[in-house]
Image (tube, rainbow, N blue to C red; front, side, top):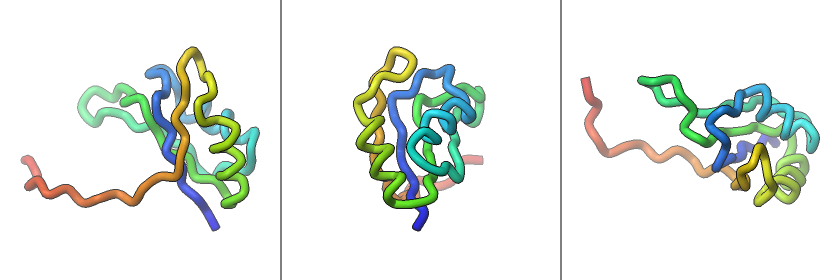
Length: 91
C-alpha cells in the first residue's frame, strides 16, 4: 500500500529532485513534491513524498525525522488527509 509522508522544515532552496533523492535511500519513491506559493512560485518550506510501501515509509520516518538536511532539522511523519476549506473561493 502506498503511503504519503509530510516533510516539514525544508530549506527554501530544496528541489523536488533533491527531496526524491533523499527519500530514495530508504525505499522506492513514487513521487516527491516541494509545495510552492501559487503567486510567487517560491517554496513554502514543506513537501510530500509518496513511498511505494508502508515498510519503506516507516523506515524513512525513523531515519529522517529530526535529521539534519542542508542545515535544517526535518520533520517527517504520515501525511494527514486534506481538510476542505470552509472559506468561500476568492475570485
